Length: 127
Image (tube, rainbow, N blue to C red; front, top):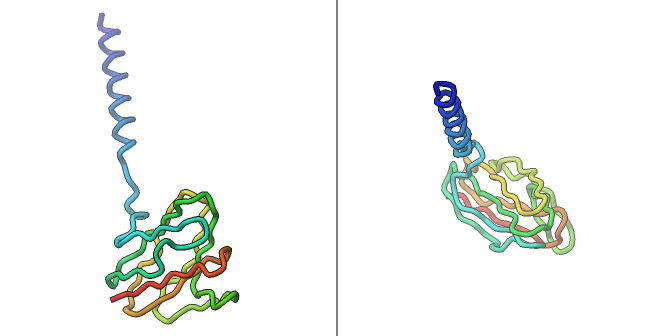
């Protein structure tokens, strides 16, 4: 009788720990700021305005890979550029994933682009 009670108590305790562990979230990956979604070959919005100190959560809603870096496309030419005050951006997406970009600690207008998809530019305005 006592063995059954002990076994049930141990199993219940292990299940409680398992369910509690599933609710733990890594807040270091959470972006403090808005989300910008990416389609197969473009940003779904071309510009985002955020507050100083915020990050932007980039969300890849497609199965397409993206490599996002500082700079922009000018016509059909990639123009990598590290703008003064911009965080260094080098993010790789494999499809249906997301990652924070930033934080942006300096006011100004900054540009990032996808090295894979021609014309895929995003302007980040920091106030």
